[in-house]
Amino acid sequence: MSEIDVLKMEIRAFADARDWEIFHTPKNLSMAVAGEAGELVSEFQWLTADESRKENLSAEKLKAIKMEIADVALYLFRLSDVLGVDIALAMREKMKINETRF
Amino acid sequence: MSEIDVLKMEIRAFADARDWEIFHTPKNLSMAVAGEAGELVSEFQWLTADESRKENLSAEKLKAIKMEIADVALYLFRLSDVLGVDIALAMREKMKINETRF
Amino acid sequence: MSEIDVLKMEIRAFADARDWEIFHTPKNLSMAVAGEAGELVSEFQWLTADESRKENLSAEKLKAIKMEIADVALYLFRLSDVLGVDIALAMREKMKINETRF
Amino acid sequence: MSEIDVLKMEIRAFADARDWEIFHTPKNLSMAVAGEAGELVSEFQWLTADESRKENLSAEKLKAIKMEIADVALYLFRLSDVLGVDIALAMREKMKINETRF
Image (cartoon, rainbow over all chains, first blue to last red; front, side, top):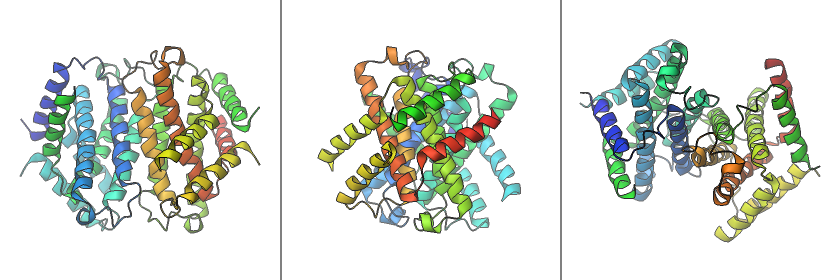
């Protein structure tokens, strides 16, 4: 099983153990992705471009950012799981399309 | 190399070939994630919970959603790459934290 | 009637004329706000801080930004209308709270 | 002065008193709008359409939503102020455009 599929399984087990299936409709999960993406962008909103670079972030700030990246990824993978979307395949399809655009 | 690392490499190569490094600051990439998450949530905004389920989506709609999931993932992986964040590790750390919360 | 209330009425009339009431649940409207906010942030994602200033934006770019601001405002006012929220009052309450925080 | 202009002035005074001008570039403010829109959509993510209706929200939940609406509005008005955008005018222009689309 691929790394992403293993992660999807772990997230699914986590959700199932808490009876969250009823909440995890694609619609709701898309909202959760947007909500977490909002928290991620908030971490950067008052930083200059330079301050946002890895070498200029405090360990504490980088940790906070890492947790927000994780939150977006967790809901994005969960959404992909309930919709049966192969993320890696979709990413490569999108890059192929972008190749002709840029 | 892990599946996610391979994808990061492919995205990095794509960006490097177009001299996008100057644009790909963590700050800008966090904005791109938020922008794409906005497009993803837009796909679902007028659907009922039931209409949003996999079995009720048209092939065309599912395709559009897939491409938005890909866009969020592409920028999220790129952001993780420039910040040196191990996404799988971060996701598991976050699930560990969530285990004690829920 | 206040300026904001007049705008709310105009938006309500626009929605009613198209039988959009069924779609305009608070949940759906919060998604529309997030979706449009995503489009707004996208307009700025590759600009530097300086390029984003009024005096450095092209007329065309400023026009596009203006339309995205309008879209966020339209859904935010519509959401406030269906929830019976007095936006001006809420903004002043929030500034009062912020006064003690900052 | 119009109601919206008065609110813009109050927000500007609040920001100026805290020397926030340097942070309030259009780019940063668009991020703040997106971040707050993310918090707003989060308030609704696990509610059903019916639960999200005014009459079914607890006083506490409605209060939380009101404060998130205020946050989006505060940054949207601030962004409009620094860009010299007349929000009411922009909203009416956008409704005019939408009239021909829907």
